[in-house]
Amino acid sequence: MKRPKGANGLVMNALVDIAALNRQTFDDAEIRRTVIGMFREQAPVVMAAIEASEGAARADAAHRLKGSALSLGAGPLARAAGALETAPDDAALRHALAALLAGTLAALGAIEPG
Image (cartoon, rainbow, N blue to C red):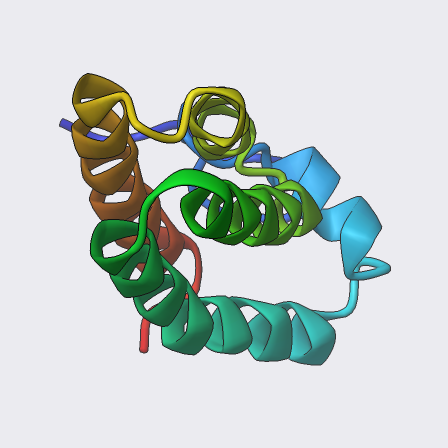
């Protein structure tokens, strides 16, 4: 199944708002690649911190992931991280966040292969 493309030819998806990503990166492809690359490197590390911690430390890590997700236009991931930030010991939220992170990383791969 083909996915629709935005005005700039980028694949549109439900996990990353392409327009928001472009605004955050000033419509600059090199900045977009850099921001996505940084997220790809850092998000799994933050998710590992979320998994390994509890309570306030987990809430802090969830807050970091929320901010990173917002910088990419990854609204669903940011909302899930925000929910975990307010309820850090909720295992279902933690599992949902991990699944959304995996989906977001896959969506970013469709936007910026690498």
